[in-house]
Length: 212
Image (cartoon, rainbow, N blue to C red):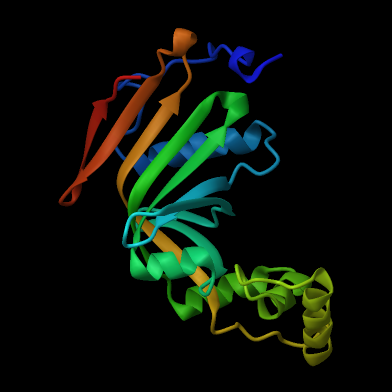
């Protein structure tokens, strides 16, 4: 079968203006809980799009680790490509796709680093090996060979033995995307999808419908 012939009809649910909450964060919480209950492997997986100041984009998958009125939180190495691009251009976008529910959520806004205390709290919750890995890997830098990384991991495992406290790396932490736009997309038949859009105006949200 050719790529052009791959096709999935969407006919699970509909989404109207009267269905959604006036607050996009409450609406997101409702949909996210449904995604969790749908048995998805990682319902918090999302695509993060960043760009250079010149507008050259890049995108990758990250994990959502916080969702509240102040914004959507994820963690990474500040030295990574996305970290460098967010420093130079704090505008970014997120997209979550829940295929079982035939839904996606698109979020746009500006990104800033969260506090060291918030990053440390999450870092402490990570598995020991992941904490060590944050020290061993210089994310997005060129790696000559896999064994170079493995030697770095071994060195930090020795430096911070299991059972001891692994300090928070100065180059690692969280970001918060404060949204100015949130779209809830529900797949419909014949590609006539429902798209309910929230746009931020001062301290209020305006709700509208977008053409599919």
